[in-house]
Length: 199
Image 1 (cartoon, rainbow, N blue to C red):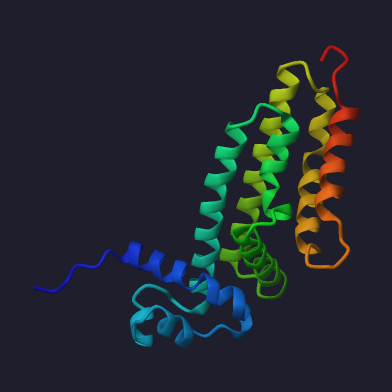
Image 2 (cartoon, rainbow, N blue to C red):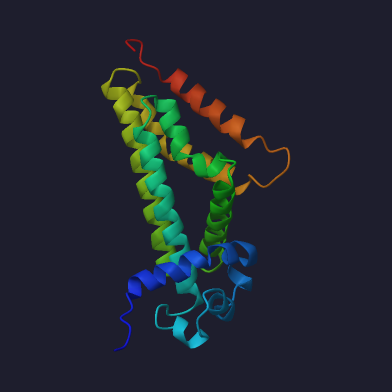
């Protein structure tokens, strides 16, 4: 009897096993043959689970994003301070762990694809990510407003904070670029300026 394969799980397994390879090669140098070899399957078999190389890369980015989102939400729930919640949201930009660095590589490749090979699928993912994170950021700040700790005007800074976080991530590979302190200082200053008198 032929072995029954869960296609979605197999797709996920191939994408996850190819993450390190993608980080090493980047979008343009990565080949379907390398992905197949890395996953220990025939090149033709890859096309049972993916349309093309772009689809493989999309899956790698999507699964990395899902994993990161779960961690972010857990870290946000585990602190009551607005500053720490915001920093948890921006950990991708400033984290120094091995996984943080790998995720930054993935996201930088994602930004590069958005700029140079903007397919509808990739652009929609970028829009979804921005919508999701600005929504979470707005919820964090709204919680501070509801508790009379922050002024309502702080919500006007949501898009600017998101844009700053992205710029810190993009330039984080530059030497002498003090991204961690810069982002922390900016968040502290922003919350201080928008602190409610009652709070």
